[in-house]
Image (cartoon, rainbow, N blue to C red; front, side, top):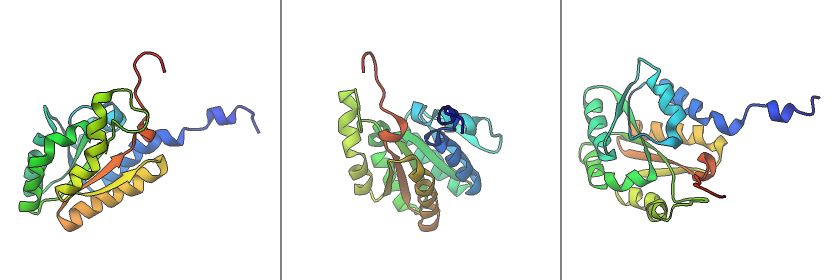
Length: 183
């Protein structure tokens, strides 16, 4: 065996965005709403390159809830991609998903989590799951790359089978802690 084979092996942790993209295709997701986020960048590029998926860049995350509810009422499935810091912007709008029994799968990359450098990210990072659950969202968390695809699959299925908001929280252990300056 080549002693450098480990260095040449594909990074299993790096393919989770491709697995999510494959799930979007499997579940016939036609709309992706997002505020640009480095944690989702590879998935965003895959969606932008796919002419069968309409990608809408938002100015704020709650716009995505309204957009995707309209897509659902118009016969299309959608997913909202965001960072945990944007969850606070969505709280009031989540009530619409309940009132109208509208599926709302959300894929949330976490900040203020494992190894966070920015103290301003910590409060919302710590509150994300509790805040979503307080608004009736079914929340599942993935902190290992191998858990992301099955968790996202379950989140999407549950949203469209129960007509409720759901979320997968993708932990900072997976996406990596950002740093500025010295480590």
